[in-house]
Length: 199
Image 1 (cartoon, helix red, strand yellow):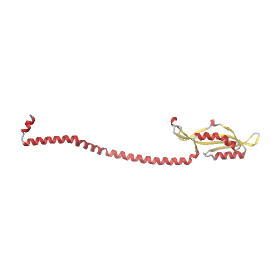
Image 2 (tube, helix red, strand yellow):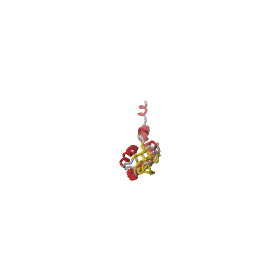
Image 3 (tube, one colour):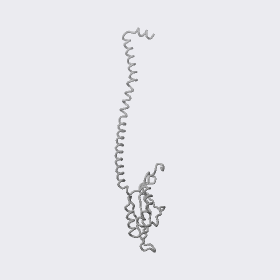
Image 4 (cartoon, one colour):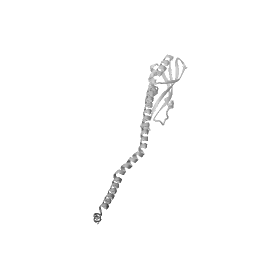
């Protein structure tokens, strides 16, 4: 029926109908194909400044990281230069374990070494940090002749790792005229590192 009516239309009416169909078809194609792309382009234009800012921030973050890496490398180099002054806990045990033999080497004897009375103070960092440096202080009482004690003290000061002698007191011993009693206060710097299991 609709088809019959269309065939009965005159030429100008048919042209108007075809033009209307073309316009409707064009609008439908525009809505389905062109409009989404236009919307995407508008969104890109809208978000482009935001993206540029994010890229700028990323560049800033990268430059900050590069600078921090340089600082970290500098600090590592500085630490390597002074690492001979710092012990790790195993080296401290080895040192204290070898003091008796060292004293015997210079014909001295250690009369007292109370490691349980060590004084420990954190001097760099905090105990909650992954690593920190603490100062460990111990007093030794060594017996020997003056020349032997002098050699023993000199040897202590020239160990591979830095040992700080913070106090030295020499006294005569009772009943032995050549044997002296020497109280030596030793200070060590120990790098304590927490293991992952301990964290």
